[in-house]
Image 1 (tube, helix red, strand yellow):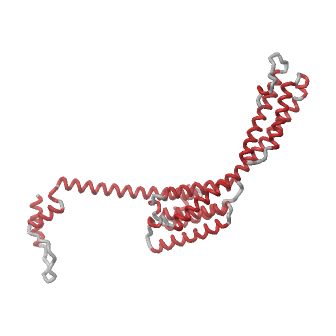
Image 2 (cartoon, one colour):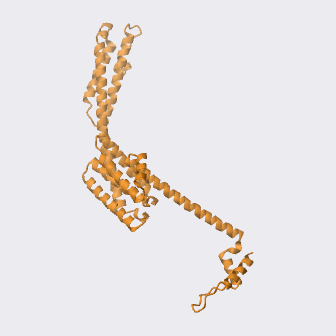
Length: 340
């Protein structure tokens, strides 16, 4: 309903035209607020009966303003102001209620998404062990410590998932974040499947934690466990406590710290790979240049030169006395002369 829908337009010669327009404007604004509140309540599945009753009252007041004579218009001015204030307050309360319901729905959706991601991780990472072929360890002790941390995380994941609660699912996701960060620190980042699994996990975990916060659920346990786990991972890679503290100072949020650490490992591995590629390219170029500049120094030509100089390739006679290098020196001199 709008002002033009009332059937009582403001007449140009109406002595109360400005007051009538002002009151109708107030009521139309409240009408819009109430209609928005109804839409939000409907999306959240909440009852809209109270707000609809208020909207009907606002419609009645609009009709009164449109048809009232100057005397009665002045009389209902206070009633309209009170009705508008009540309607605005009810609309605000309804939006708050709808927001609470929406937060609850977000928590349910985030929990379901987290469980789906964890189901895939349990099958791929912990059962099929898709990252194991990429893992690298500095020693048997290093691998044993890694497997111990892995076993502890599996126990935490299974126990927390059995709770069937959002905080339990969040704690399980936190243990999985630690597992993938540990795997990345030991080479799993080279797997073509790692980045997708990692992004899915950290995204679903962040959404679940945000939804938990919005619903008043504590995430202290999640933060503490992930921070302790990440510290143990960094120590396993030789970082000192002071170096680890610097990283946490830069990223106090443990989930952000884990993301930064994995990204740091990715950058380090990429730099190492690029360095190896550059070295291989330089070596290949140097070999090609030498072959072009000195074609007679290829392996086949060098062998021909040595044979022409009198050097023979045969198994040494264990009964023969060792030579003292004179023969070799003569042969090398001949080779150098031949090669110029």
